[in-house]
Length: 440
Image (tube, rainbow, N blue to C red; front, top):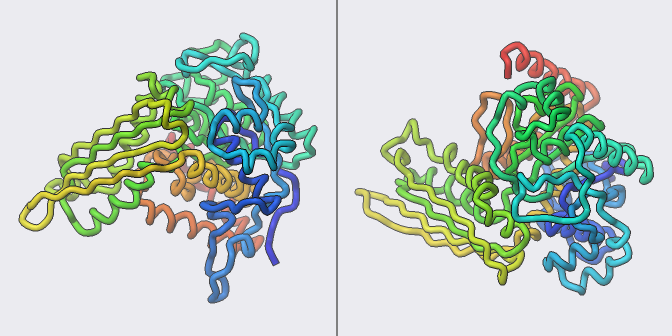
């Protein structure tokens, strides 16, 4: 018998654009038997149990798709149906069948600051106020949504746009400084940080699916620890970076010498328009460039990987819409340093690849919370370009190592008794105390 949690769970999405509405529509279609949630480990994954391979849902108590309730915020007033049609990801064949359900989901007014996303503007925004007042308004939204929909718990997942790059400043270094910064509307506090703060203060775990600096600041880690809530991020690993984390470990395993890796993309959706701004592109570039560092050991094998030229470009090309295209050129050499090349042309549907990741992260982050885990969830690194880790650790980027971390944790959840669940919580609290003692 499947082990599922039967209480209603809110999935709150800041940024109900292409990724958010594709996720919502896909879950609705799966509930009705109209389409399969392909790409979701939660729905199609399997684990070893008593010497047999069994469906993940059979042995891990994840929330049923039928118990998920969707809501969120957006700077545009379009319902989920209208937003999905505008995004152009899904065909009328599916959207017409789901129209009534999708039209019922209307976005709440968003916290928006054009200083952080310069190439977008919309009418559905909260009135000008201090950033603390914005955070309190979001907390009121969360409380009202949970009450109206009779949800026992929830998860927030940022699916909004890429913000301009933000350096860590004093205002980010402690919760006390951050809250003072909210009251003073400090310019280095971004909307994503405000959403993260509001969710954690409301008792909901938060996931950052964009490359924005939101959760990976000391203040947010401190708040997550204080509220005993899990957090995860950042930047969903969907297209070109997914290919890198599959191919690069193979080259490293064969001790081939990598000289350069050039990547370029064309993208025509709202995300492409946002990334056309240099400030937002810098945030994305930092996330995409980081993935090769831990896969190729530049320190222990400088003769193979000490001078890799890694370049990333993204160009906004409106005719392509959500169907992103990525080209990669890898220059490497083998025996006696003879040169070779690999060329990749990946034509992908960005939101189709992202939607199952959003679903998995909602279900697994909720599971982590119910098992007593808090702070950054490194076992969810599988889903991110730039995984958030506990202070001082180096992120793991190899997809295969990340998959082992993910399934290993799920295997522990599947095997856990009440005593073992208590052990997770106790070990987590021990790490928290150690982190506080060392100033992590």
